[in-house]
Image (tube, rainbow, N blue to C red; front, side, top):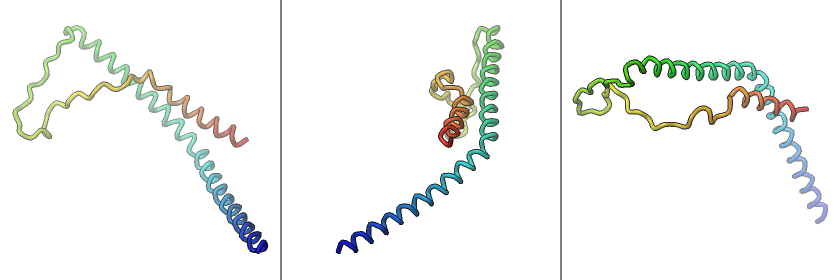
Length: 121
């Protein structure tokens, strides 16, 4: 009876080791893919940062141009239509949180890859 229990434990241990080997191979493959994507992700993060700064500059310019007119802007009259899907003016979305509350994305991306590299060492 003890021989059967020993064989069962041995089989379970071999199965666990085989599963750990498969998982290790998959993790290594994923880490290699992340290393290959690092330059692309970094450039994407830089592009997002540039676009955010461009939007803030455009917003500032819009406020500057609007200031000589007293901040008054006449909205275009909305034509009478029965179907609400054909509006000429979009509804204003609710205010979202300011972007200054979000850490700089490039720092987050850089920190992620530094953490990965330190765990590999």
